[in-house]
View 1 (cartoon, rainbow, N blue to C red):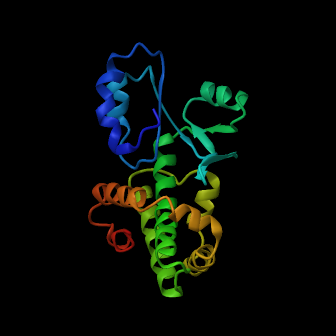
View 2 (view 1 turned 90 degrees about the vertical axis):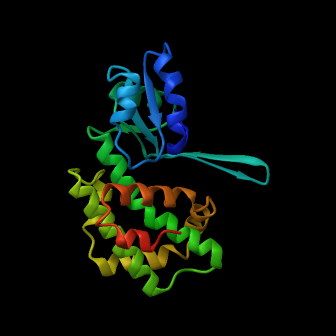
View 3 (view 1 turned 180 degrees about the horizontal axis):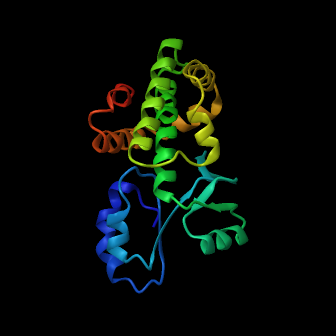
Length: 211
């Protein structure tokens, strides 16, 4: 199920009645996964994220790239995706992986939205705000009982704040961030709101960068 997170509730009644032997959900979310597992049954449930499957509609043509980065919570399905040409790894804590991913992409997507709007990179002061939001996001994930994952994201979460600030300032001047920002503000807003709902007393820095 590759719907958007706010859309999944509407398809759960159909999934409950489905004869499918296995149902994998694939979308960006910070919310608990238990309601999805309960809806389809633990024996049929899994979650994944197509991090390496990229597609852009440019001048009426679909341009796709298949890179490393897809992650699932089920080893058998990782093999199926790998055999289909989609490099896929497994995570023993898919919930923690998703929340770590949300923490990382919130400032990146929010920077991208700002860059597209003004057609210029962010200031150093703004980069400091986004770095503070990133640190707060990782703090919330850890506070909810998860280890930051995967290893690369865990490494990033331990960088000194000035270095993260510098990285955000530099990245705001790249084509990749402009492409990310062109996707719009809906997804970073959604993820920030989900994170703020999970930790309402700890989300001030995140809400400050909400596009």
